[in-house]
Image 1 (tube, one colour):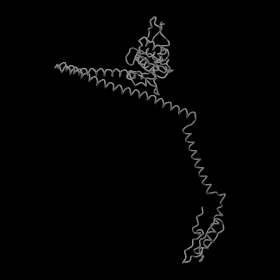
Image 2 (cartoon, rainbow, N blue to C red):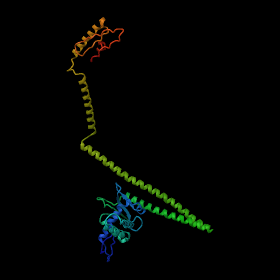
Image 3 (cartoon, one colour):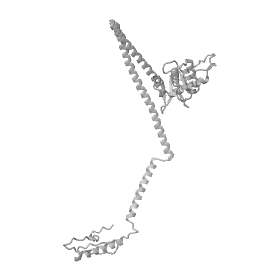
Image 4 (cartoon, rainbow, N blue to C red):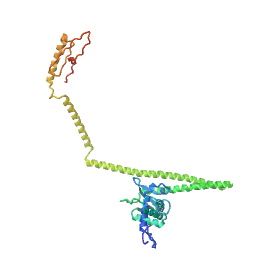
Length: 363
């Protein structure tokens, strides 16, 4: 039974009467209103476009800013009636018969809600931490008021809301002016047919004034839209700067926790390059100049004997064409090849090249 229950209006109470308030009905009405608010972004109707909706970073509805009083588009009362119309038409959705019956009943309740009912729903949402009332605006949070929220809306949100309201009013004014211009044109034509030229000129002046005002309102709409886009970009830039700041702090924390400094990293890389160069040099030296395996004095002595043997063979008249094979050992093998016969093709020598073609020894 209605008592001294406070509503969302300051210093105003529900009068004591015999009217019965169903707590469960109020709770279900608030629940369905929040459900409708969450799915508003999926509805492309003109009525929803008059509602100012703010989304979060992932595109979900975060908050809805509405006019506190009245029944104009964009007010809380208009939102309640839109939700009621929606739930009455969606009674055939999947679910049990009981759920469908509840949707229809709540839809009828919201679609015919009174001013007192709107105030009661607003008070219930405020007490349940789903709405905040500030002066002439009501901000609804379909997912609940975030923890640690200092204020319902920032200055930028209020500015965007004001731009939205002004754009809506300007658009409605343009529609009225278009109707006035059309009416003035029809009246001018009608009076001109009646040979009432002066009266027709009066309506033509009204039409011209309406068209000029339409052009002015169109320029205002263009400026408001440009300002809204710049404000949205500025808010996005703030988020980008915050992300960059957190990235810098994270990188600094990683560097400090790891103990890495630029000088240390450069010194480490220099040491690695030096060790790699030393490793390659040692490998090459070990492969070519292994003094433990090869005796240089022995090599020079063997080379001297090979030179003497070559001199002897080169001065012998019968072995002018002889090719000498110089093996890697100390012994020298001389395999003379017979002189070729003029009538026969010369035979290919199976011996190795002579001493004059011997490969040079390493120094």
